[in-house]
Image (cartoon, rainbow, N blue to C red; front, top):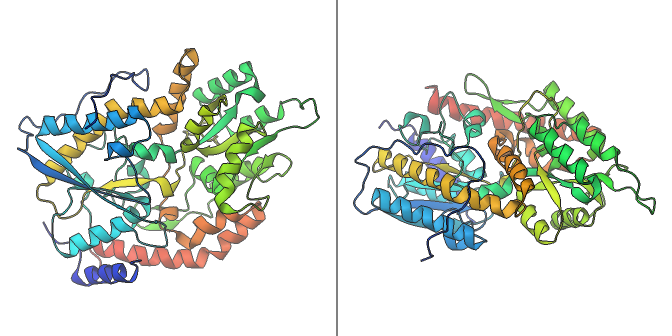
Length: 482
């Protein structure tokens, strides 16, 4: 295969690396996570059997995760599901799965263990890893460095199948090329999905049911959310709970849920800053009407609380009934269920009723899959990856749903539809992954439209300079420009 990375670029990557160093029992049968029919299994070649080949996965995240290590999963059902997936894949394909783990802090401003491992492996021209599941920030940088296989050039994995997240192809491709993937094979990513919790006790039984129906009909907008919160009567002591509970980062999540991004690639594969688009201003105004209004919202950030306490204070306020809607992620749901709080799990509201729901992601808790450039057998790697992803859909997704959904009853079926809706379209933002303009740090600190606009303008020059450098690399690697 033609080398697509020049020696000078390898040297730059290696220099940047050096300067930046700092048996379970079989799972019981589980119910399907949705009422839809099971997807057809992957159409793998009949001779896909590899006589004991050791298939090595690099798992390099910001923190230990259980995607390829069953013992790291938090519940017995999840541990058993991951074990069973791995066992079935090994038996079906005649492989031995091996995971090499490396964990460390990740951000858009630094390079983590996944970046380091793949740069060193590429520089040595060795096939150390068949598949890599690495932190989203590292994966995004590697995607414009030429160190990864173009997944769209391979027969497998078939990224059109339902166990793959189709949004990755929409949001993270370059000139028709796609180097990253996500989906059911990364179950721990589910905890990073942004959601809105709706307090049953405040909405009342009929109010909560009406709201869930509104969501499933595709009509859950910021306007409807505000209307539902405003309809609540004052409590006997005269205190009215906040309409929404928010914390740092919610404003960017709200923009992504509205279809906005800090940056996108255009038809020519060039990265462009999109923060100033009219759609951003519209979405910001819809969010601000509730979340930036101190009379209608509670924010630990606004109260001057330390960053490390924001999540706990937000969840405690919701559990105490101090707010109707809480903007959080699925990671908060199991603990709140255990505390006996009754609530519905909804997607972020839309601005345009005709648009699709999009679920923002906590990028610090998100990994992405990639195939390192050097492979002993690309087809074998793709086939094994496809089988693992399919089995994850069949075995692990139902166990994930069990962590988030009410245990029994008619409501479980309705909440299952909401859970599937949350996972159906996730939002990936290249601008946030690249840390353009330091926006992931500065924009969440804004507590009003004026502050947001000021932070956006302050970072524009830096963002433009970063985009220029990224586009130079893209042009050299993928467009044949020297």
